[in-house]
Amino acid sequence: MATRPSIGQGTSPLICTPLVGPSAEAIHTELAAVLPKAPDVIEWRADFFGAIEDTRAVVAMARKIRDEAPGCALIFTIRSRREGGQPIALSDNEAVKRAAAICEETDFEYIDCELGNALADIEYLRDIAHGHDRRVIASYHNFKETPARDFLLGKFLEAEKLGLDVAKVAVMPKGMDDVLTLLGVTLEGKGLVKIPLITMSMGGYGAISRMVGGVFGSSLSFAVGRSASAPGQIPIEDLRSALAIVERSKGGL
Image (cartoon, rainbow, N blue to C red; front, side, top):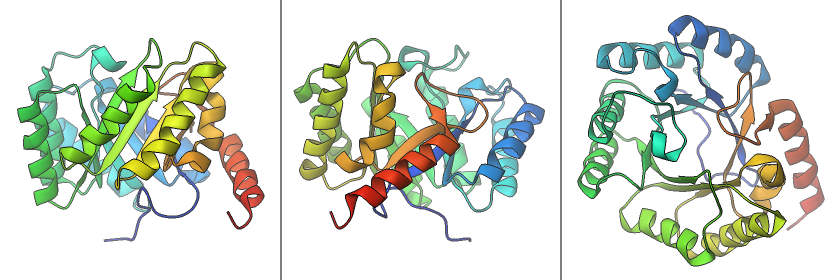
């Protein structure tokens, strides 16, 4: 297996681009546009996929993505509607079973699992993932507001307590104070838990967090390769330039 980027390694955040095509053809077109831009990680947002109810079709598509992107780390995600995903006919448990199939039948490195899922489903997916040497991203998304500091820190602690591998928090700011809250929580969380963190403040206010989040402890930043999957994502070329400037400016820090 090729050596691919790993979340939490290195001094600068990895750059991840989403795939949101509804069909195999659309995803192939996205990959053709994205891969020349050399992202470190690709997230397949399978809740956009029209054949999401067909496990065989999902696994086959995942294998095609791997074949076309052999050098990228891959994340499999079915985002629930309550956390900003597309409306789909799968229950939470059925979505977890799709993710388990990806662990068992493909070599995607990462599986997204929302902390809002039932505890039994989280533990089931964790055990399947770890049994196949996959890692679980424990995620929390809030498209309405930025919760208080203690609540967000609690999400990091919950992910670690459950034995998950990466903690992700994405929240919506109502002003720059909320962006500062998110960045401060990231810095505090970095010293509080031992697992890597992915954090972002969404929308226009939060765009700055995608560029400087790594300074505070975020290990990955999402960028637009061809299509965005969340508000506030910026083009991969712009993000790469911004991250390079930040990294040079840090000097020996």
